[in-house]
Length: 637
Image 1 (cartoon, rainbow, N blue to C red):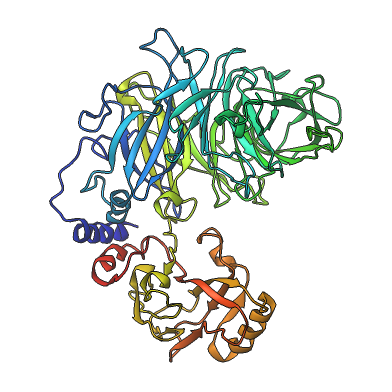
Image 2 (image 1 turned 60 degrees about the vertical axis):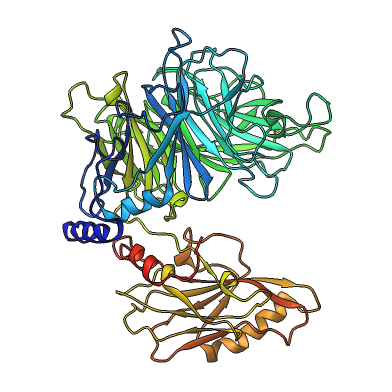
């Protein structure tokens, strides 16, 4: 890896220029979290923002730096900006000393170039703005206290009109019995953008975070709620709750408020009850892989209580499965099976709604199989199907676990740790989120996390870069380079240094309805080229007719046809394509062709086409920024 870092640094100097000056932010402060440099899994850690940094030039008017970093969320603010929201878990003592949520705006191009360069500090500023996340509030009491964890949810996460109707950042007060849940409108296009709402219909408690689950309905929102009511390793302290919210005009005024349309103004709280009586989680779950069946009840009677219930997260590949941590025990998963009644309110059918909880990985202090895996708190579940969890206490480590592993250890690896040699070291690493796709990387490549302390310079947000980081294959749309009204074009994919990122695709002819793939003798056999097609059907021609036609051509032209993306591309490509044309041997001695002239079929027309090479590892793609400047003839964005 040392050779790679030297190469990447040299490439970065060519791409970014070598005259950059160290900035007040972005890597200029000594990092507080260090990678653990495990062979084959050596993450890179970069300082992004420290609470003592000079922010004068980028701070909103009146904003002052705050301590006690905690929960994190992030979203696309504009084409070249990512907004990061982060909590401050400050105990209220006066209006000037209260919990809050701040934001950072990050320049996407400069961030990506920083990672390409492999340097500690970038040559162009990454962090461009900082301020308070909200500009207005709709709350009962502004004496905010102890904003702990948080989660950001995108709109329509589970399909058209399913899930939240808006992009919502949710956090809560970790205040025993009285803490409220809050929702921040985080959609720049919304008329109530940056309004902070108190969710008065939701129950009170000492909240960590919530996880949005898929109810399967367009008129409901489902949230698993995680309350840290303290530690009791005999009886447990807090139940696992499920909020089913109604997305409707609750007050009957003819319009839907932000809370109403997101199912946060009215609903019912349910509790997980094991089918076999016994309410103490510490006594019922005693070993990794144990599973208990249960159901949901509107009554807390018989509900199981967990000790030191912490963060939860939904499986990005299944909206009916979630995971959560208990600091006293370890990591759990829950599989939900919800059913709704056919009554006027479509209430939850508690008799038929199930929940099966599995003890995924017991902590090592209690005899669990993964050495050193203890005191788990914050967590993120990446679309790469990896969980990232953080220790609050013990060795203050950050862990990566594979929930699908058949090994009892779940292939758990400690990947980073708070610098144990620091004086006044932070109390914990806290808040963790996978931001990979926001910056054009495969899920699981890029994480943001932070440290927490009451001392300004012991609060720090860092970037964690996986050794397996991969750039997303961003489709290069032929339509953007074709003459107005044309639906035909030719594209050549030229290889370089064993790979060919999308930046190296060049239009060579816009007169013919085919794609030409030149022989690429320097390309490894196991790297495919895909063509993605969106197709419209306005006549008698059907998808079945089109597949018959393409399959008849496929053998001669050297490709296969599918309506699903190949397994190697899972998580690498955006959704929404009708057909995949896969060239599995693009380094053949002679060119290969694909024609999208379907004139023999009535009303069948390609409306969008893209060419996507199979991406390779980050180290192989470090030359991509150079090629952007030298070869690109049209925008890839």
